[in-house]
Figure (spheres, each protein chain N blue to C red):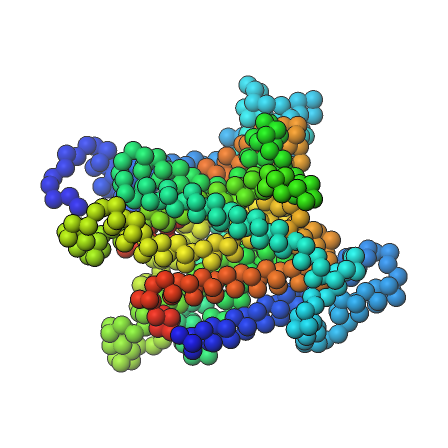
Length: 296
Length: 317
């Protein structure tokens, strides 16, 4: 806590004007995370402008080459430009991660609100169902479902949404339970407020912070999870350049060229790091009480 | 306490029953027939009928579930659809490999992660602490399959320093251990970073508690306070997380076993999925779920034993 006037630079003043982001950028690690995340966002949105080649363009005579002036990060086993594929890969990463976390967040929050607010047998049923979904390591659950549904982008999104959803339901349920008993909710109820009003204008605004922070912190894990599924051949189909697919093709040719594994692996590690640093800074700013409790 | 344990056991059994229902339903919900998938499009109708009956698929769902449960109670998990071998034999061969891998990774994570966290917590904001924090975060954010592939690339493909595939020669313990190094390090990496951060945070919290300050004021040596009084309480959250850890390591083992071709549960289930070997998938995933639930249950009990302040039956309220 600062009890004295600190010298303010123009940069500091600029930070003061942006409410949430300013606080995040003030933390060095949060700022690094933000820059990394921003970089990947930009490369996802402007992929066609950034990538020097089409991601499916093959240059067989120059296959499995190392970094050069022509191919900055080298080429894969079909002579496709690795840099272009990684840039387009960030699109796939966001296209799966954002909707799947969105599904997990909305469905989980809805179930958590219902379970916590209504209580009774409905609560018990929801809790047991969530326990059942969490009785498998998530990768096993996804493998089993995807094996039957068949690999595709939509199926991956559904499966990830389903496996991540119980966490959100649990957290929202627990918070709803405690807020439901608060005096101001009781008071409102005794004044004749409807369930709808209580849920939407009193309970929801009070429980929404935690699941939103969770969503921000889950994004990188969902991205690596999708890449893992694609690595196993259960994610998006070739020639779509998912990072996991690049990793998997690299694994098939591991004795011939290290570059596909090296670059896609580093990309995955970097985006996870960026999101984690950013998510932690966001958590510390939004809810200082949670700081350090999750350890992640 | 006893009431709680009985309640937990009943709840666990209910969850496991639902797992079986879920796994059985899964094959019916989705389009496509597993039998034609296994036998191929040119299978004769009589062969298909025979296979359907062998896999129980010609019976109503509740009979299938009942049959599966009845078999479990009699120590059987059914018969593998492609080889005709009892599934218990297949799992009996694979499960120890996965457990050895997961436990050795966990051990590695504890041996490296706990000291890292202790050092960081007792040297807060020093340069080594900052470096260790960044290293821990980076380790936490490296997916196990990326770590596995990088280790494979460096130590097996490039340096030829360590073997990369399989379990090594049968009966040769040293060779077996050599084959275990890369996979268990790859699987442990995330957890080394994770435990490092967790121990740092909880030790810092405990070091600020009144009893620690009181001991300090009473002149107890800092060494005694840190390693005798504080560490014991600081490790409680770590123990709680280890149950989850074992489960998540078993999940991560899927990737590691595929990358290092280790014949464990992950590879078994993955191969079964590839060949649509539905009975093996169901039994395999069921066994993993049982272990997963069991690990969490034991971690909960250990947790209460270590920290009597937690009252289990009141925790849910």
